[in-house]
Amino acid sequence: MAANAIQEVLTTTDLNDPDRIRAILTQVRVGIEQALVGAGHSIAMTRASSYFSKSYLASEKSSGIDYYLFVRDLLDDYDNRSSELVKRLRSVAAKLFRAGNVELSFTGTGEDLKRYLNAAGTLGLPKGRGDDALVVPEPEARNEAFVVPSNVSYTGTFANGQDLGLEFSGAWKVASRALSYDYLWNEVRVKGGAYGCGFRCSPAMRMMFYTYRDPNIDASLERMGQAAAWLRSWDPTDEDLVGYIVSTVAGIDAPVKPRALARRLDIGRYCDRDPELRRRTRDEILRTTADDVRALADGVQAFRESLGRCVFANADMIAASQIDWDVVELLGQAE
Image (tube, rainbow, N blue to C red; front, side, top):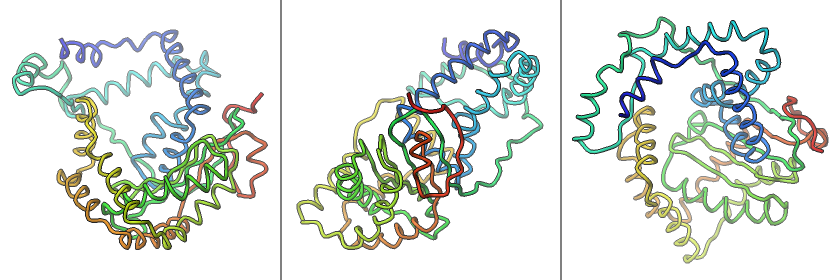
């Protein structure tokens, strides 16, 4: 049963096998290295987000670049550090896997939930919480360049719109689509030669630009910096505006599988998000006018003046950039 499987994982996982742990960490290292070369824009956006967001900073420590550097350094000196690692893992597990710390998400019918709770009980976890609470340090804006063996670059820029006094509305979703599929598509992809690019703005006003498999660094960042001027003069036809609105709403109304829906609800709970946010955003999108979109140009301009930047590229591309990057060697040069 599912309850028994979860209990087994939480309470009987063997943390005393250094060779098995080494094999798992090696898989983790290889997986992240492949992602760095193949999906660097996603990692760049997460890294850039960590410059302003505590939640993203925590993610960096547990699954991002900081975690990769930790795993890499650990494996490079594993024989000398494995004993201490086993002790730390057992200590962390004892603190985390307690009834007061663990929250389970269940997807199913009401009857299924009753049966699950009857079978699960307390999952065999001790009562209470661990003595140590996680303390996430304050984020700080950076300009980081990570050296990877790729002949193209992956760039992410991020700003926290709430820090800039900006408020979210459905119009931001329409503006994001216009910037991504009109301005950035033409300037960064068609003219600049990037394989992909875009702009995103979340309900928490986390604003970000990104490029994917991009032969340019500085030129693309400059074009991102001109996005506010383009948005301020945006003059779509009625047909174009309707097209952007319909496609934006389609993204909200797209059907999702139960697992994805459960994850969405979990995130809403953990972020204390208003359950009416999706409905309200959808209504605002349907009412969006071209004037509403143009009015957001000042917010995009503020983004340019208060941002963090992150790029993954080879050493030569980074050296050719005129930006004062903090350079970190990750995977070396491309062949």
